[in-house]
Length: 133
Image (cartoon, rainbow, N blue to C red):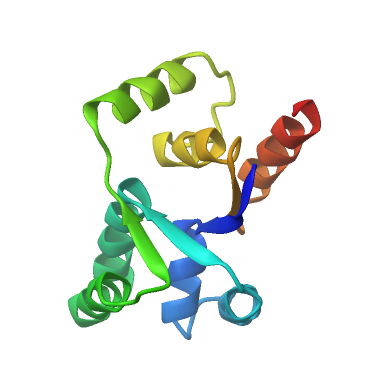
């Protein structure tokens, strides 16, 4: 596994940027504890920007985009047709109805990279996959 890279779920980014979020302090602690490069999959970027714009404001969403685009320690990982097919096939092979498509993309990535999330259901699935590896 490529544990020198970490992916943060959108719930961490959102809680980090929204001081009113009940998980803000947890997100700050997770973020401060990262000493690795952060991979930001396109799906997580899209989800984060959408939720920040809806629940906080567009300015915060804009700042998130600028911060991640201009930070040398964050690599935005764009999707491709091949990756979309891989994740879609992975999604279709799974049974957990509590996970979104973006969650399944993170579960897919967790097979090769460390994924941090505040989502209990996703964390449980990640732990099960890591036990199989």
